[in-house]
Length: 379
Image 1 (spheres, rainbow, N blue to C red):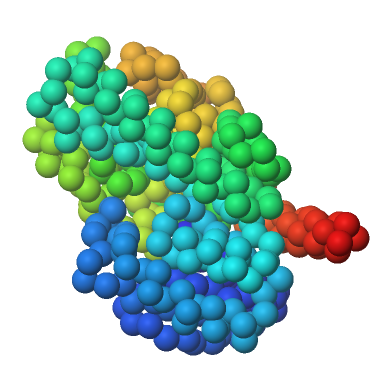
Image 2: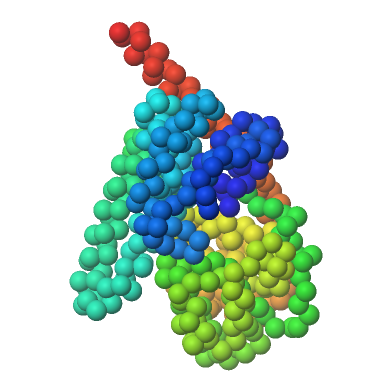
């Protein structure tokens, strides 16, 4: 989503941009100042997530991409993570001696650890924990090595900025996410019942910690609450567990566009139990819809929530339940948090985010030029 927004920003400003991405077929298309290079994945590709694959043979496209870069003559290469497309980008930036910016979007090391917890379920608990933690550390070490290549790094929260600077020796800048407050708005609400609606939007996968939703529902019942329901938007292999273990939940599957905006607006309290998200775009989308959020104290979402003003940060399941009950029993306070959430989102525009990204491009270009100048002087 962020990459698509960046492409849109470049097009609106008339900035020349060559966007290299995986697609249904290999080819080149143009749209104003933006050109697209689509690269088809091979039958050897394997699924990483819904709609996301990795092709171990993707490097066969390197020469084709290099030819397009030679025509386009870029000043800077921007890679967006450890994926088959960005590996081509980083290789060609090195080969063509182009400055590079690298943005961190996903905590792959934590995602892998959470998924392996389920895969290694047959092992003793301590053995499983030690093994997954070891793998998590090794993946993170590999990611740090990869991110040593760009001149400038972009990360979505302060913890990641610090981690990348410490682990790579490179300068890292904060790159938050913006939100479309016209698309996501309280005006899209269609619900008229008086139940409190808890909501979740995202992949229904282990790394999102979604089983907490079922536990939360159970504890709310145990506390004597029953005038509530859950609205769960998304797909993934944890959906079956949630359907079997939740009584009040409505499952919509994947939604986008106006249907997604309506779903957000119909939520009263957004619950996001993920401990692995680097940022959490869904938090800002919920805020823009006038919905306060409950998040964990792990990962990026805690940097978005203003404690007690636009939501709460929970240490554990008991905190999620405590804050939920507090808002259920204080409708006046819930209304204040809804208004605060909307106002907070209105101040976070995509335009300001991408102006900062282009500032990073300029800095990477200047650093590379200065380094080359120094080499020539020494020669």
